[in-house]
Image: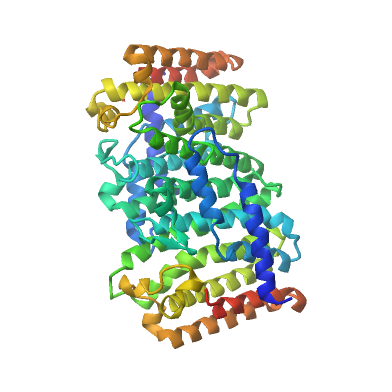
Length: 294
Length: 294
């Protein structure tokens, strides 16, 4: 199957089920519910859930088991975007081609909508029909990737780096390994856990996740310089405007693309322990990450 | 034992172990770590962990099993205070007698420190040595109480009610059942779960938790009008200043105190299924909640 078609289908499928994992509308405070629903359904590539489901399949699991975990990952990703966009953080007004949550619902509700999604993510996993043992493994994996050893730490470092021109390559890599890489890696690994992957398989998936996560961030930096606003759905050129040191600062656009390609090639090597027929999809997703225009 | 002594000892014990549940200081982004540590250790009654441990004991469990859950509850409580204090929310500068987290570390770091603590809470439970089955039950209980069906929803409603003088008693009770009551109830119930309580025992603990949670909030409202700033450690009179409808608005100071007492008496009735020797502590804690001056 063509990857484009596959990604579209999976995205449509995930778009369709996300709302099913929200609770009923409350008696009071409906605006919170509206803000959560808006943020979760306004769009996005759904890369993390797609990776989770694909990783579940590569180890031989059925995707229905991974669905609550995939949904939880998208909830966590969405919460992080809501908080990152806040005036006190990146102060962004446009995301996925629409007003950011705080711009539409106000700052207080945006902070709370993020909090709500983070809580809900763990609740969705805990309340799923998975075996308790697997739930706990996945919650531990995702909690670490999302929290103060992962994504939250990465965002903190990113803010501290802003406007400084003395950011070293080591620091930049640390930022992105945590800010973007950790949750992408956890998406792949948790899919593998749910699918019943062996230790060896989970190790390969972890390596794959780290390498595509790295490539993903490099391409994000490239697109901020060389992408088209319409396709990306957020303001282009904002990194330069904010005086941010990015991978493009160190490698230039061409050099950065090359780095991303190298990383994706290594990621694909990691998949060699899986049967050719099964690994094809994760290979294609890896290539898509460097070739994407949005 | 005198309750005062008991509470002091338990508080000191909890104060002493909280830091053990934080990860090592990171290579970059140390300010996040500092903000988390500051917020978590700056003080507080530690009521939620104390309730969790006491509920574990009332059903016959050993407290060592409940400790990670108790720590997680204090982390979640602390995250909620950090976010509630933000300029976009309650805009408070003083908490527990010290500058609020955003006042000391800036808004961005405060938002992230809250996020970090919420993530860490679930991670701590998932990584504890409890049986997987119990971990999942506790995560589900706490996630629901803390999230968009619980505390987060309550805070949203509280913000929406601010400045409005048409808040009904129904709405006010809805706010506080979610904002304060839910996590207090979850603290008691999760202690009971970890201690191996029966369905009947958990039901009694849930009723107890809801009733003391209600009383707790009423007394909070009373103290905001009639308390001493020095003892409370936060600005007194802030509700009136913000034009907030509170339980004092409906019942007056004396009437509100009476309501709280009635609720606590009912809470104590809930405990009758437990042996007299064992339930004494939860009874005393319930009475403390209405008698406290801070």
